[in-house]
Image (cartoon, rainbow, N blue to C red; front, side, top):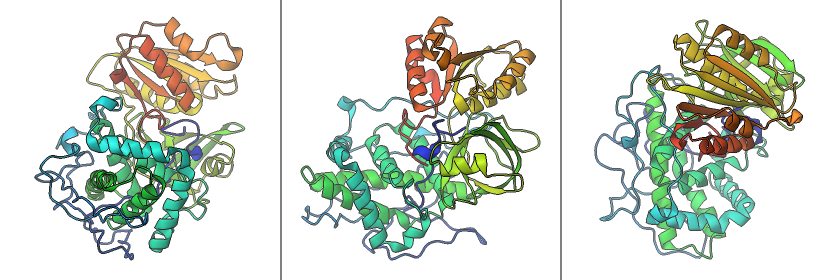
Length: 500
């Protein structure tokens, strides 16, 4: 399935953020590493703000000691929008404007992967609780929102003109890439006060960007061009205090990604090669693609990864794992071809056994908490059934007998392409119940089915599918009495994560 949303990631929720975030302090590159540090024409004034040593773990973004440094306030605002204040080292101000994002939100030494449960998502901070920097960030967002296309175009123009060495990190065709980079930047900035969600997101983003060849010196270049674009199109509100808030925010955001990437570089490759070993066309536009990685690939049931095909270099799309980890090391994905979907179309209609793909690192928080015996309420729409199936297998392999209720939503009977697999699992495991909900028959919509078969007070909920289905499903789950912190999903639109 496509992840984080199960409408294809070809439609704007992919890992297409290509080399724009990178450390302020470049981590040491292991000898023989595949990716060399880019030597660009970065401005000397945009010096990195780095840690003395990289973090110790993928969930660790804090420095060895002390707090992240904040930039000094910029020079008085210039009328030339393309001259932002430099990202330079700085000392902490007497009264911080916003709490820094750091690994204090994550344990310094996390438990083993098989026991680790990613943190629950939480709602964004309320407006009345926003820090002064967050208020200025959101005022900027409101100003540039109506002209987002112009902001995006100007941002890329600045980036490629001032730093042409970065162009090679992006896809040759920018039409599917164009909106993702800036949207991810702005979304992260907007949620600067929502530390638990944002740290998890940024750490995944930092690890994921290694596969693009992203290096430390790229971050200041992107920050410079971001502020250049914002200052031009938010000119009615822009001033020194806005620029200072964005410098602080961007520096904080980038440092979390820096530390995550540096720690990950010590323990995992930037990408894995994977050979297609099976291609099962289930419907005219849905295929189950099975691959064999070139080396062990650790992941948890319910997570997703990013895929790149040989036909569209540097274009990555998210897909969920369709099974729990297997003893043979094979990985399966459910892929639905969508109109103008470059990667999804290639995987469904062109990929064949023997083709070589590339895989990014695993990500996602829709995993089972095996420290409890709560029941699982799983909602899967379309190819969103893929991670749901993986969760069921995970429970079964643990030998647990906790109740698992699966609602399999589809538009038509044909879209229930994996119903036989789910029914076989139901026959094997008495604790599993599978119900199909078909929109075309209009007998019972998925939210109504959830309410009818409740209550679900003692269940943890998992939702995977198109954004609209996730929104309706989450609302129905809340209405049925399940608190938000017990509802897990990796929808890009519902969370703050906009790109990889």
